[in-house]
Amino acid sequence: MQDATFIEMKVAGIALDPTNNAPIVILSDLDNTVVLPIWIGVMEASAIASVLEGITYSRPMTHDLLKSMVEHLGAKVIKIEVADLKDNVFYAIITVESNGEVFEIDARPSDAIALALRTQAKIYVAEDVLNRASHVESKEKAEGPKIAVGFEKDKDKLKEILEKMSPEDFGKFKA
Picture 1 (cartoon, one colour):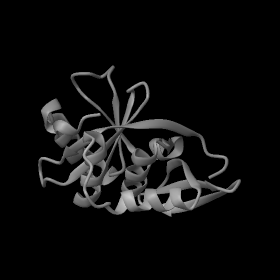
Picture 2 (cartoon, rainbow, N blue to C red; picture 1 turned 120 degrees about the vertical axis):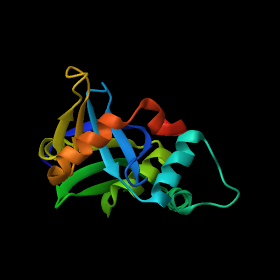
Picture 3 (cartoon, rainbow, N blue to C red; picture 1 turned 180 degrees about the vertical axis):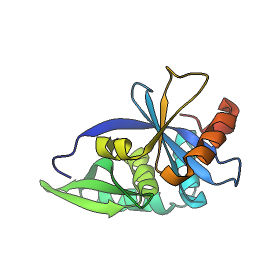
């Protein structure tokens, strides 16, 4: 992925798919022109939401433990990248620097995002991933943000879900 072009993104919020209550992390580019929803697990959604809400627990959760381990080992999370999309599955890379050496670690995007939020690391998505993901535009706002999704075969169903969502559906976890 060294030759790939990446676009910096931010976590725009956490939403629930109204058809099955599955959590979705919503990434947006810094200009809010492209949105990438990624369906994630409940535990990962909770880990991301806790950071967005500023919630701390008395005992470290998994991503807090990982952050603590990285820091205690004298390393630093430099960035995370959603670097690939294969068979409707997103792949991420966590880039860590330790003693001048850089390591790339394979990760699920949800775990990488949860760690990036805890370490203030930047979040990037490969332009190629955005290009290969479906793009859905709102009928009401054809000039507004495009929605990039990794579910080409479910494009119509996803479009229906996204069109039915209101800002309130993004819940209190909006960033």
